[in-house]
Length: 172
Image (cartoon, rainbow, N blue to C red):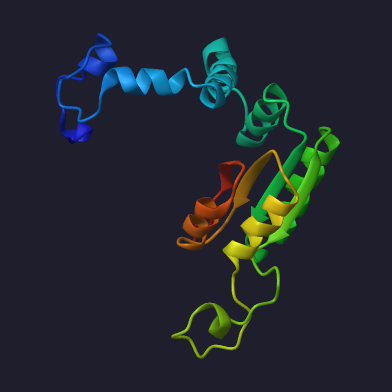
């Protein structure tokens, strides 16, 4: 399936299937109605369907979404190179009434050679497994990521237990 080369676009125009999908439609619909998914669907719909789509910044969207979901504790997993930005975002979320748990990618002070067996580099390593573990131990309700490197973000997302969304990516 390659939606970018489809000329029909029936899924957009008439809300019908193009019959090229490899998933069972009924199973997907059931997934949307599962208890842990339906609350997110409803909160997202309040943001998108009620005319707020395109009117809020990403930070405003996250704040509004967190309020709709009744999240209290928000984790921020950030790259140390974005620490000033993480501090600013932490302040904004704190002033919006949330408890904030920002954790740098260098938490734990691991050497690169400790994390990567093939490395002889003795500099400090990014540590997405420790970031996720720390936020899991804080029992955060929701986590945002800021600037995690490719690969590190994958490991972080694989191991974090809370729902997660990306606030910022690094563009070098």
